[in-house]
Image (cartoon, rainbow, N blue to C red; front, top):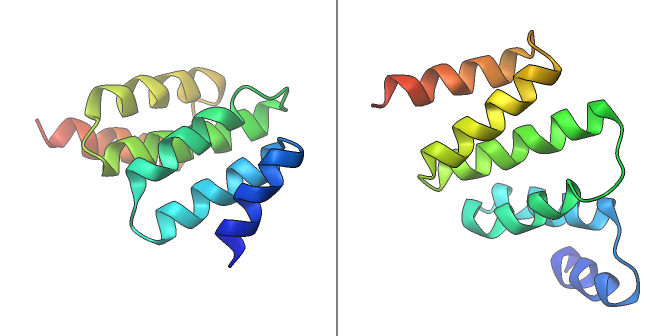
Length: 100
């Protein structure tokens, strides 16, 4: 399956695309805790601001779905410092703040 092939590809060469895809697969399979380390690793790559925002949002989403509210909030605030009008981040931050 795709997940197995992507994991094997990391033994050959680590790429942002493989980490992103593995994170996406984990989220789609309703396994947000498994997605967190993959999304975290995407941030270590030299990425464009847009990639940083997108991958950071996905990391925040995985954290939120895993019950890691403080970590999700911190990531969202960092994203919003880069792009204050990022609607998905604003909405997720609002949801997290309502769940006090």
